[in-house]
Length: 193
Image (cartoon, rainbow, N blue to C red; front, side):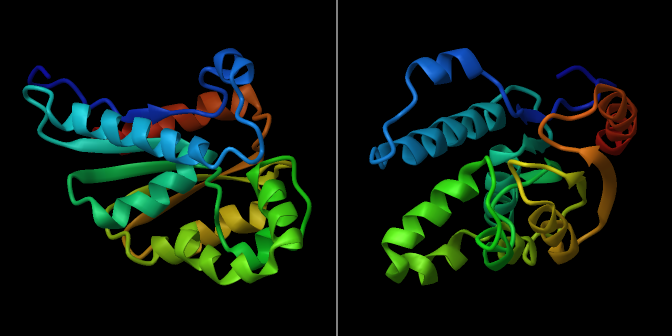
């Protein structure tokens, strides 16, 4: 990284690689899929930290990546700033109360078959983990989102322990391109400091 060049956030945006993922989408019972995704994220983080001249790491994750970021950031002190775009996995009691088109629906169906698993979910609640995040975090949360319950997104923001900034979008999945353009300008300023 050259001197004077703003740091580049580690990106994990919703829809990244959608065609490739659709072609090899795991069967519902394939429990390896989440582990494989976590493994790819861990390799990306290790690779970014090993870049010559990388003085700092910033996290930028959306939807699933926003929730994973909230779960991971408290435990990795290499990150200095983060952006969580419509973060998933926030506040499971609320998340499980409403149907969705996202991963929350799969969790609801699983718990309908195996309710004894419910206590385990708190270990994977992004809002609970956010209480331990002390770095500056920029959250883009949506008022309406069929995939990620808005109440869960805002719960992640409210739980953050450190400096935080909220950017409210009208919709999350799909997002309004004009809103994202304005947000991206604000976000660039956030990551530049």
